[in-house]
Amino acid sequence: MTSPIGEWLEAHLTTLPLSEDCEGYLLGRGASPDTLERLGIREWEPASTPAPSEHFTSRYGRHGEKLAGMVTIPLRGPTGTLTGIEARSWHEKRVTDFRVPEAEYNPVALDLPRAAEAMWAGGSVWVVEGVYDLCALDWCIPKTDAAISTLRAGLGKDVLEFLARFCTNTVYMVYDNDDTGRRATHGWKDPATGKYRPGALDLLKRAGVRAVDYRYRGKDPGEVWRAGGLSKLRETFARA
Image (cartoon, rainbow, N blue to C red; front, side, top):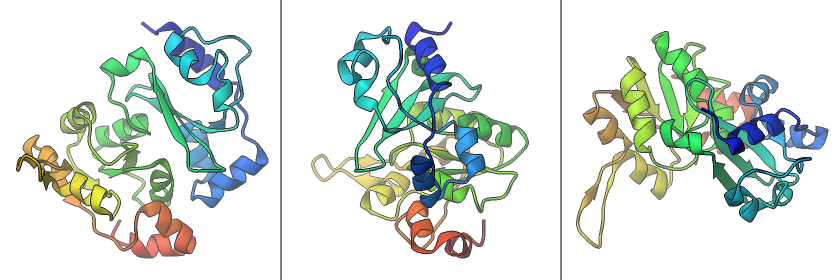
């Protein structure tokens, strides 16, 4: 059963535009027109009716006024159920996210429906941090595969279970080449407690999934795109 805020948000997302300037910005960040359409990325405008959620209105205003002009990315579960949104300014570094109640029983990541379809057909999954990393990899991974963005460095339990249940091929970890991304991939030892915190590779392998750390030059796939465009991206991920 869909929650009232889920229904309201789903209906409003279908009305949102994508201005020429915003689309140009997104294309410059590595998104293709096909990727934008598949993900349903749009530019937020306040709704004509108030949101039926005190949690939403307390954060963003009755009609979502505080989200105005932000790039809005719908998040969906494997079957297409709306689990929330991520919204980010394309003028400054500002990101926010909102989850609807349906997120409680769905894994939350970006482009899960496509990943489910690819895994069902025996394809592999490429796991990245951010939306622009996903947009970049979309250009060069095999057509039989799919990329998902976990929106941060780290596999949530729900996403881990989703991959463990459905992936019969390989999960390629393509997190950022910084301390946070490396720790999220390989694990780390907490200096305060001395306790080992497992990374994505250990968690996936313990769950019976074939997982590989895909090493590449550059901070992240999105930055590779910004540094050299499609040719640099294909050179960097030539083994994809």
